Amino acid sequence: MHDPADTSPPPAIASHQRRRGLRQWLTAVSFASPWLVGLLALFLYPFLVSLYWSFCQYDLITPPRLIGLANYQQLGSELAAGTGIGKALWNTGYYALISVPLSIVFGVGLATLLSCEIRGQSIFRTLFYLPSVIPVVASSILWMWLLNPADGLVNSILGWLGLWQPQWFASPDEFLSLHTLSPSAWENNSAPVGSKDALILMSLWGMGNFMVIYLAAIGDIPKSLYEAARIDGAGPVRRFWNVTLPLLTPIIFFNLVMGLIQSVQAFTQIYIVSEGRGAPADSTLMLSLHLFLSAFQHLDMGYASAVAWLLFVLLGVATWFLFTTSRRWVYEGLR
Image 1 (cartoon, one colour):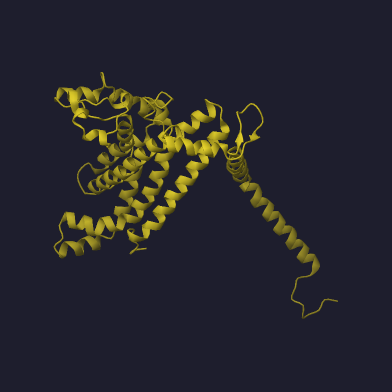
Image 2 (cartoon, one colour):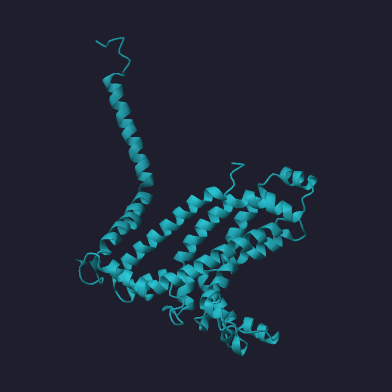
């Protein structure tokens, strides 16, 4: 007989509840199965296999052969000599450390201007956002024509104005380098602007995505704060510096992290403008392109896997550093 003091359900009911819970669990797993299969087959498996391949010699034809730390020793020697991965790391650092801060500065500035109530505001917002939705291949070909040193539109306008005409994608020069300070760099009415500077210019053209995020954040700032600052006698510059900018710092931090990752992983536009080989003179040989060429042109998948893991570690360290330092400059007063 069933004990009245026993509050547990009868065995038949308990068995029915277990079967129903199992059916619910199987239903949930079946709905999530496409994502789970994608996670296992397209992320976790390549992630772990690439770690194994980084300790192997593997040419995609013969089976992988363990060689220990030889690939990482090759990376170390190239870093010390400034060739291969060393050159790619310098190019990537130059591109990322200049393009990301500039995209933040121009993005915040444009968002601030476009937040003003003026006639045609929606038209201006659309025009500045439009470049970010143009396919990367099309925009890259467009910029190659615009920045053509011989007959490009940009140099034609500069020549008509009597200004210097950079060589853009045809030059390995770097504007922010010690070579820029030498008088010989500015001879023949030409500035030491090269391929990486042109890539940075291209990246600024498509910063509409970040601008939209800043616009949304500015719209969420309480109007009462601006009214209080205006009553206290703060002008437009003071209101921007003391109200808008501090409250935008969480969004700036988000775009800083995302922009850094995107700039390091940029590939399509770099492959197109560099003719798929880092031209001219390896000045556009970024880490992503170096990894691609090592794996699919030189068929050295073991070395390419080591490059991928080095890139993973560098991005992890950079992201950790940004999160650590964010406590000193990211304002969280309204959170």
